[in-house]
Image (cartoon, rainbow, N blue to C red; front, side, top):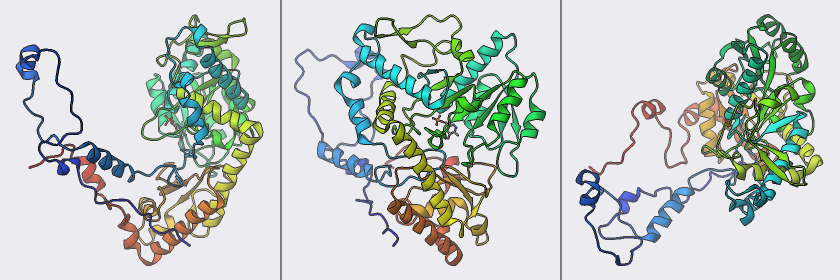
Length: 493
Ligand SMILES: *Cc1c(COP(=O)(O)O)cnc(C)c1O
């Protein structure tokens, strides 16, 4: 039933330095046809090294094989399921990659004259129109390079808007279930952060919100569905409470995979929000990017959007408008991560409205399937209905000394990437799982079987789980020593 431990090709691949033998090389340059100069004379003696210590001397095929073997140790979405909650690690269809690599798209230069870049401008305008429709907002910028960057842009838009009303205010309210980027962003945008406690259902506490909103509050930043996967059912009332005091509602849209084509933030009172195209709109993510975090706003915030703004040129084409008096300015070079925008448009158009709706329904169904199949063995952090992700905790397994991090590492032995560990912080010992819509029932069943097996191991052989993973080249690491005494250089002696 359970998948066999994944086979790792050549797990005993050594360091490239160990392959070195003097005199080997990968490529030889032809004899120079210009006179040689003395580099020390040209650059100064202290800028020139007679040799690079321990520089590995290897042939081309040894270089290629070494790095190809190393690449097989990496786990990616093309290997198998990636149940990381809050990340929406869905499979990225190859058609998106194909489109982004087309010569006329990948080869464009951002300084190309507008007349010669009409196709690219049209791509951006189309994507903007679709995202405005999907979010129910009035205007959008595609410039920010990630979710957190979108948050910063959104907070600067709020600041500029409130400043134009005479007072930027001092505080941003953030629920205690929030992603860490939210408070960090608010502080970078020059605001103080005040935490709002969640109620017993894991949702925004309206009374706490009501008591906290004052003329000093610029905005509430809230993720919806929140980081427990729960839809904030009182979001429209929260918007009313904020608006009555002149404050704004910022929605962190990282969890839009649960809402696309089903519910629109613009319809439930949101003033400004970001999307993570690299999550919801199926562009590859991980390893630090690139990503895209478009920010959608209501009409009153539109004048402050970053420049340039893509607009109709009135002659059936498109242009970039750099002149907007109230703009907060640029937040990124050029127009944003264009390749990511292309992939998001390809994803949106390939699915169409019905496909996007089905995607949302499948994401919610898959998460609830896992939740139902594991709820007898793992405790749920909160018991209410959830959407695209579910959060268990390790309370039951702790009785045999096993923690969420141990179970996550044991999943590696079963051939799965771990789930999200210890987040959100309001759920002690959190095990946060988001399967996404792209996993088949067969893959979900394998994951469920692995989690069920591990629950059994926690009871009968807790040491096995606490020492996982065992099937990998590098087994359980001393994480404290790794952080405190990192070895950053290879030494031969
Ligand atoms: C991923 C995430 C972010 C940050 O997005 P990045 O693109 O990684 O900067 C913010 N909030 C939530 C809820 C997220 O899941």
